[in-house]
Length: 322
Image 1 (tube, rainbow, N blue to C red):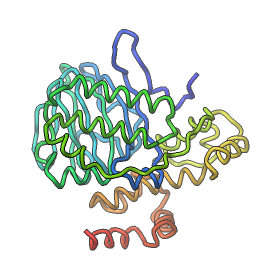
Image 2: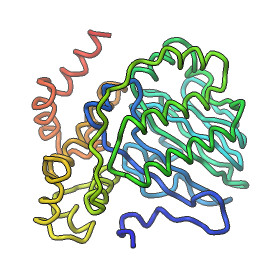
Image 3: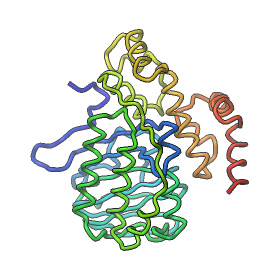
Image 4: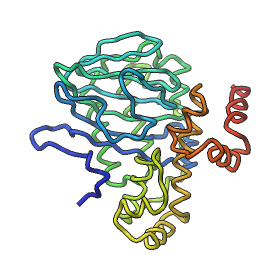
């Protein structure tokens, strides 16, 4: 039986699409430095008249229609049934039909939702990395054209399903294999001749993948951290979520990763905050809440320890380099 915090991951036997399932992956230094790294995958089926977005997402990814959101990463979302609308500052309101892709870009305010009369089915992948920014810089995709119909939507759907199945088997592992599957999804979404040219010039990926974790309780703990990390969280909360003694979980966690549970919580929060500082112009108070830090001083201490800079100085340094 799955722990309570996964109750949003429900399937309907009468439908080929999940009602709602999503995974938020840990980011290692090796994966972060590669050409593409995957941050999240998921799928959902929204029936006509149902509220949207579906529940259970970290604050960074959740949003309300009236507010919209800004992400520090890219996203490819395929609508496989129904219809709806998308809006960004670069495009205005755009109609979205079944078989079309919605592309999200880092630092760009946006919002989307299904038509209340039809609902829709969505399958998606969040990603980032050098390759993604290179494709954007070279005009392979554009912030002004975020909605299009790929040449083979069936192929794209199959690739998204395959990636989701792979992540479901090892939800605490973010490996080179997953990055390569993400590249296949990008290629299927582009579905253009120039995509082949881009694939021929892919940057080299790191040779070492993230350490595979076979302990199911550690896997559940990692998924809990990366899905619920925006909330108040202590080691005791993680142990309670997976129904195991804190000391036992800590020991098994160190065997699997060589570090403690608290280290993983901080890693999750810093990873999200760093990407928001790097990829967006959001104020630091907003980043604080989205990443899950308890206070500005707490976030400042983590940034100083990991980068040598405060969040403000880190952003300024990045801007000067670009």
